[in-house]
Structure formats: structure tokens, C-alpha cells
Image 1: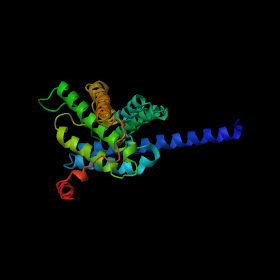
Image 2: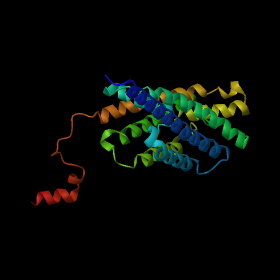
Image 3: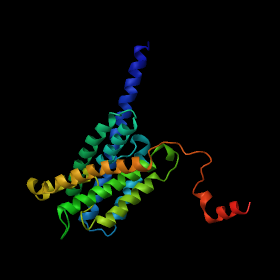
Image 4: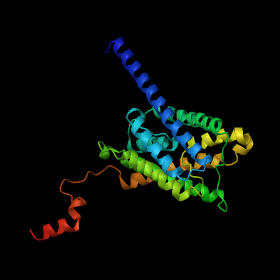
Length: 258
């Protein structure tokens, strides 16, 4: 039987690690949402690049501490993937979702107080809510799929995950920003909601909130489904299985003339 002091030390370590990971998620999500808000209200032509760059930077900054989810949709995707693949449930992830949403609210209040402006997160122009919901779901699914792929066990030790995720968000913003506003993140949606409560009033701020909260979460399910179809994790690839490098034209020619 372990001594009580050992148990207390383990408990203290777990609590400290949990607090550090939650704080890291708060910081990363906060700067991401503030970057989104200030770029949009100032009509920056480089919004997509700025948001992608901030996300990439925060992934490298807080990734070693919390895993850098920075998005409730990503956290839900990780929880679902772990559940389906039989991995142990990490209760800290439920706290991630709460912290990310709270951080989004704080960031929304912050960028409104700094700029005294906000903007509507809603379908743009002739596009309706169904189109916006479908695109938000599809591109959040793409984001979650990329996150799961570049952070899986097979990719450990490789350092391009942050760039891949950041480029995915940049590409999505360029593709659907003029149609849906491109949230892909319930924390971003909550931040814009918080700013709009001050700018437009509570009821006006709620008009499309449900869309930008539910569509990304449905995208989580889509992303997990794509991941499980493409990279289920078994069976293992045989050692003698040819790689992509082996199948290039030059290598095929070399093999033919041996």
C-alpha cells in the first residue's frame, strides 16, 4: 500500500498540471479570439493570414502544456476519437471546453473595449443559414481531421503540426469568410457574441449564435469520422510495404534495371 504522502504528492501534481493546462488554454484562446475581432473590425486585408499565424504561434507556445486545442470543437473531436479507439477518458478535457468558452467571452469584451466596435457573425449577402451551417460544419470537420492526423502517435516528434493547423484555418477563412464569416470555433462565436451584446444588445446578438455554436460541433463528428476511416490505427503497415518514396518514377526505374 502506498504511503499517504505519495498519494498526496500525486494529487498535488495532477492539480497543478490541470491548472497549468487550463491556464494555457485560456491564454491561447484569448489571443486567438482577440486577433480575430481586431482584424475584422479594422477591416484588415490580411485577416486570414493574421488569424492563421496567431493560431500557429499559440500552438507552438502552449502545445507542450495543454495540447493547444484552443477550440471546443477540437476538444470534442479528441474526446470522441479517444472514446471510439478505447483510450482512457481524460476528465481535464471537459474543463478545456468551459475554459475556452470563458476565454472567448473575455476576449470579446476586450476587443470591444479596445475598439468600441463589433461585427455581425451571420451568413453574408445572398447566402442563407443552411448554406452557412453546412460550410461551417464541413470546414470545421476539415480542421478537426487535420488536428487528429498531425497529432496522432505516428506523427510524434515531427514539428509541422502547428503550421498544418494554421494553414488549414487560413485556407478556410479565405474560402468561406465571405459566405459565413468563418468561425469554425464556438469560442470565437462566444467572443463575437459578447462584443455584440454591448454593441447591438442581447437579443440581436443571439440571432445566429445557435448556428455558430452547433455547426462546428457537428463538424467535430465529421472530422472524427474521416479520421477513423482513413487512419484507424490498425493493422500495422508491414516493414516491407513500399513507401511513397519507393514508388517515385526514378526509384521504380532503378528497381526495374536491377
